[in-house]
Image (tube, rainbow, N blue to C red; front, side, top):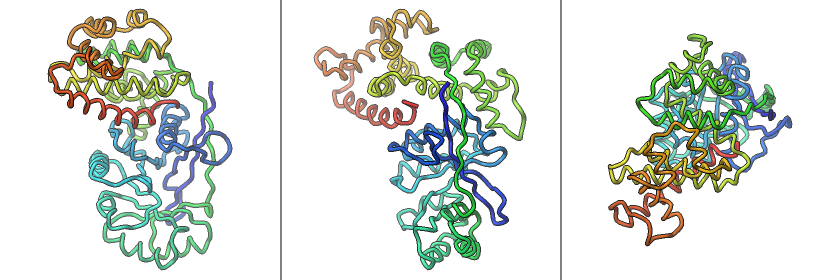
Length: 401
C-alpha cells in the first residue's frame, strides 16, 4: 500500500465554532503544499479524500472546501461530489470567460455552494460574484481601508464573507467588526495533515466494468456482479456513497450503493480509479488514449452514424495493449465487449473500425490512407484539435495520481 496525505485547515464561524475544513494538497507528512500542477494537486486531494481516507474521517459531519482549477471546473463534476457535503472553491487565478461562467452556473444550479478564493474585486469579476455564495478575502493582501471597501462593495450581492489568512487577534477583531461571517488563518490553527493508505484496485475488473457500462441495456444484476469481484473497488464505492448520503441514510451494502450512485457516477469513479493506478506508463501514452477516445466521439457526432459513447470506448481501448503490456486479442477475450467493438479494435472493421482508422491515420500523418468518413478535411482536423484540447485538460486531472 502507498501512503497518501491530505491537509486540512478549519474554518470558523463568528462564535468560533468549526463551520468547515478546507482540504489542501500534501505530498507527505511535511505540512507544505509542494506542487507545480494545480490540476494534479486538485485530483489528488479529491481521490485521497473520497476514495482512500474517506470524507467522514477527514471532516466528520462538517463541510469540505475543495479548490478547483479551471480545467476541473470545465469538467462536468456535478455527479461526482456530494453537493451537501462540499463547497467548491474557484481559485483566484482562474481565467473568467463565458465558458467558465457557464460551468459555474451549472454547478450552482445543481445545488453546490460556490466560494471564490483569495478574492480581490474587479468589475470584470462581477458575473462570478453574482453566482457565488461565499467570497474569501485575503486579509494580508489588503490594507484596512481597502478591506473595508471590499466589504461594502460585496455586501449588496448577498454573499457570505470569509476572512482568510487571519494571523493576529487584531486582524480577527477588525474583520469581525466589519461583519465577516467566517474566519480562517494561522491565528486560529495551522493546517494539519491526515494520513491514509491507497489500496490498488484490480485493473481487469475496472476495464470490464467500463466496457459493460457502455451498454444501456446492461442489467443491474450484472453490474453488481462485476463490481463485487473486486473487494477494493466495492469498498471505495461504498465510501463514495456514504460520503454523499451521510446524515440521510447509512449505506452498508454494495447493492444499495449501486442503486444510489447510478451508472454515470460509477463510470466516472471507475475511470478515475483506473487511470490513477496506471503509474508505470508515460504520460503521453495516456494522453494519446484520451485524444483517440474524444476524436472518435466527435467524428461519430459529426457523421451521425455511430454511437458516440461506443466510439469513445473504441478510441480509449485502442491503447490498451500498450497500457497493459499484453496483446489486444488477449485483452479483448477478458472484456465483455460486443462483436462490433471487438472487430473495430482488432481489425478496424465496420463503421467503428473506420472511425478508429481515421483517427489513427490522422495521428500518424497518413493522410492518403485514412478514411474521411464523408467529412471534409477541415472537419477531421477540427475534431483532432478539439480532442487534443480536451485530452490535455482531462489527463492532468486523472493521470499519474
